[in-house]
Image 1 (spheres, rainbow, N blue to C red):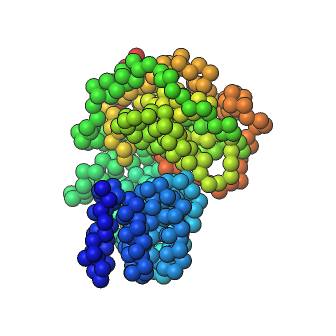
Image 2: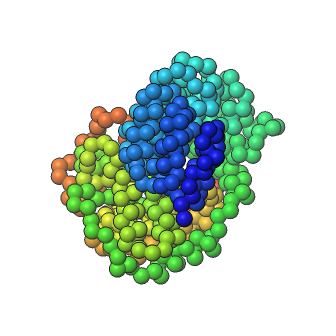
Image 3: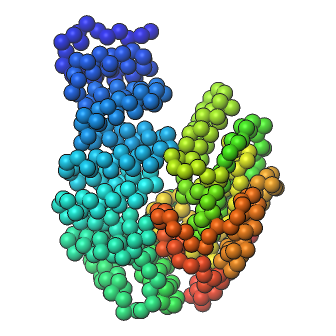
Length: 516
């Protein structure tokens, strides 16, 4: 039953129209709600709330072009409207039009000044959307033209790390620390430690980090981050005893707050191994295919993705979370499974293809897509899965030395949990390799760093790539938002192979580490 617009709205104020429009939408009466907002827009032509509500309803009802048209028309007359800008950015992002997202949000700051909360919202949105360069431009512009807020310097520093602007990061962090005592709680200690490989124990960063530990009011999270930072610094210096000392305390603090369950993890993996392959698979796209680079984190996924994407036929989209979201949608959906798969494939494809130059292969290097290989192959039977494998003890040490922001990686603070994850990931890799033998490739980290050219040539041949990728490329640096932001930009080196042996005298649990 359609809810009619009551006569009482004639002559009613704007908020009454908005309220009734929301009621219609909540009852699923989208057509009636759209008609009401159209009438409301005529009565209140300068109401941003009505225009945004109208556009939002078009979006909700699948009329994306109409929603975009409404928002762009409004922004042409009101270019400094923050709400319309952010809504349009979200609409464009859903369609995979990332270049247009950056242009839209940057345009907001070309028209007047905005408060610090709006700037930070824009920066966080762009960073979440995988657009660190656009976010960095906005930060730097705001710093140059407005109040020199330490928070903006902290954000700019974080973004500069992703972009490989390490010297600029240090400048921004220095300003934030000098002008705001609370800046030490903004993840700056860890950020500083990742800017270089320390070669001198007198480096001022070490004294700064040591000084932080002496502060009586230091928060638990900042203490933990500082301990991880000091562990990394002493590892660089080759002082493995001191590194172990700091990292033990850091991991103990992190593990105490962890909610990760080894039993829950194992049950999930066992269920995937026991599931049968589906009879439903979509037809593959004719002119492109995804590459999923998977494996235990810290096993070389970032390095491989960055090197492989130097080939002109390959684009690296970083770590996307869309396949996990797709799995959740599918598990909660009822009805026509094939139609749902088709919709999911379209949605995820937009995030892979995006609105830039076309390629043949598109990389999603979310390591834990290893859990979702079956879903990936149902969506794209022409997909390729590259599984990175590395010596278990080197992998375990690298995980244990890392502070993760995502609770999904809380296993990394306990060697027993790490062993369980590595063991089960190996089981999954073996399982998928048997199920999809022509689409699944194991790549050794040790082979990649000792013979990168030969290893990459083999992968290129497997993918059917023509020609050889250049050793260096002149494209703008792509943002790297993982812990490998610094390492992935260095020349390939073999010093990480067998690295665990440095710690064997100080970590007996690592020397006895066995994920079998």
